[in-house]
Image 1 (tube, rainbow, N blue to C red):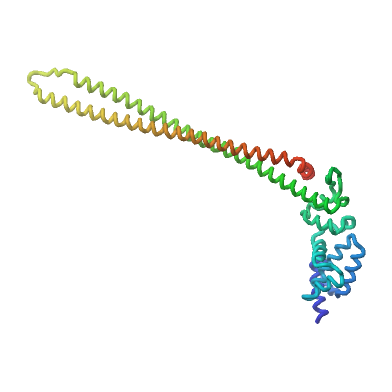
Image 2: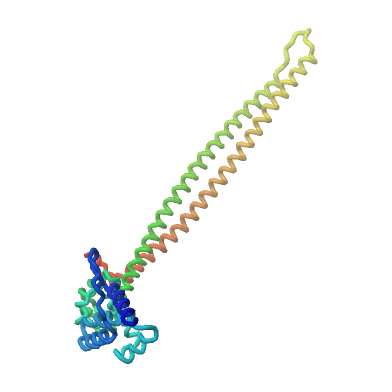
Length: 317
């Protein structure tokens, strides 16, 4: 029972490690590997060093899958003399490290530090030289502390570049918003200015009409009545009063229209002044925002220029 269980576990682990049968081929009989075989391989790899850390990590993955619950930690401490944390580091390297040949000179500690970088950037970071206290060094030449600092400086440079880009974008957006707001404000002002002119023209028109009606009414009152003796004077007077009443009604309507035009003119003028004030206030606020955004973008870019230049140049290449 135990041997069959271990064989199944071993086959599953080998499949996870990329050692399964190729597609389209019949699966070979699973290789029987017991814990003693795996332990011997790990101990031999410990003595070899270098690239053998991958062998150690794979062996630990295989052993953990093979051992029953409760056997893993005792086996680690008694047989291979690793703490659980150390074992986890070796297994992490076996899973995620894609360049085993570099481990010969690099060592497990630095390799683990480099796992903090995206896999697509590790090889380039390894090949490049980096400024360490004014000296050009490769990753292999660095101490672990220097490598940790170089990775942090790279991350800071990336963050600074991203922040500078975000600040510049904010400045561009503020500038575009200011231009759009000013266009809208100018359109409103143009519309209100046209309305003011229209109301003013209406007022002048009614003013002329009132002057004409008043002159006509005055002429009607002062014009003598030349009638024949047979004409009824009372009828003439009644006609005069009727004509005057009609003229006064027209005059009152004209004055009401003029008053309405004057009120509309005042309202349009008030709206125009209000919009102009709003435009000035909005423009002042937008200019403040734009200045702050541009200043922040400039400060971020200049403060991190030295830090990010090397990274930027390499990215461009």
